[in-house]
Amino acid sequence: MTTLQDIAPAFVEMAHAIVWCSAATVDAKGRPRSRVLHPIWQWDGAHLTGWIATGPTPIKRAHLAASPHVSCNYWSPNQDTCVAECHAEWAFDDETRSMVWNLFREGPAPVGYDPAMIPGWDNAASPSFAALRLRPWRLRVMLGAVLMKGEGAPMAWQSQ
Image (tube, rainbow, N blue to C red; front, top):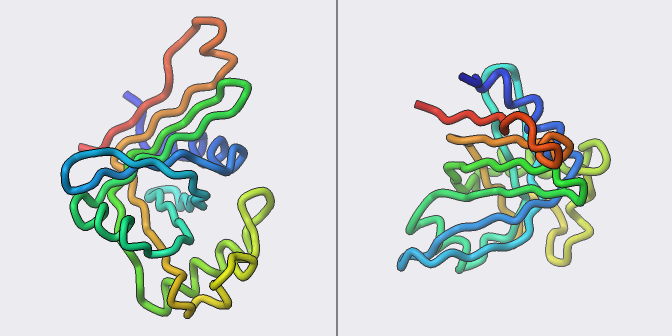
């Protein structure tokens, strides 16, 4: 069985190389909605946490209030894929918002960028800026080279 310690480093490496993911939430009626987002993942050897710098729009707020889960699916043209199924929660406190702002601003290429380039995001205290914390309960990583040869299986992990 694959452990979180086995899969998390491979997941972070692939996710950060691909950068953009299709992220899906569901509304109160169970209907999915997807969007393209840009998480940064932190792995400390025991816990994997994703952070999304995003606008707390009424639609995102309503979806996460109805079901606090996000599916983040990454794909690259060489068929590398990885998925994180996550519990999601807003982090509106100033300390976390500043930490996430700086995480993106100081992050390595290609995942790092200056959040101030987004219209309306002057700084971490901007009303249109929020941090979304992701805590995966399931991960899957599949190398395209393995997939194309029909060899092996994806690495997968799920919390108990």
